[in-house]
Image 1 (cartoon, one colour):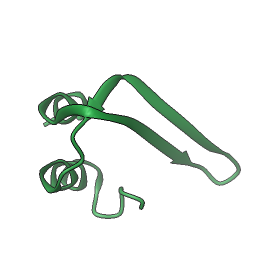
Image 2 (cartoon, rainbow, N blue to C red; image 1 turned 135 degrees about the vertical axis):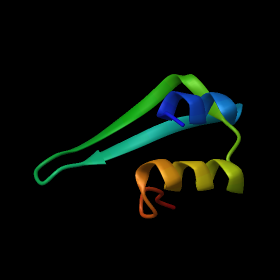
Image 3 (cartoon, one colour; image 1 turned 60 degrees about the horizontal axis):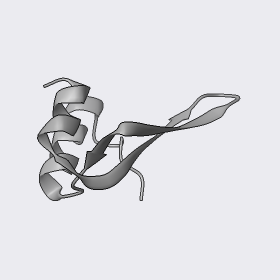
Image 4 (tube, helix red, strand yellow; image 1 turned 120 degrees about the vertical axis):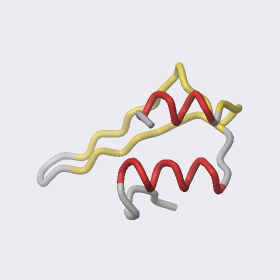
Length: 57
């Protein structure tokens, strides 16, 4: 399953934010086109796609 498919499959009302951390810079992105339902199924799909440490509180 691809990133876009994961977000589309778990469509909801919560905005999506992605934090990219580099050695010298951190960038915060807000995906305005995608909103999700934050539930265990979404979290499981994201961990499978991006790895177990991809989610932050």
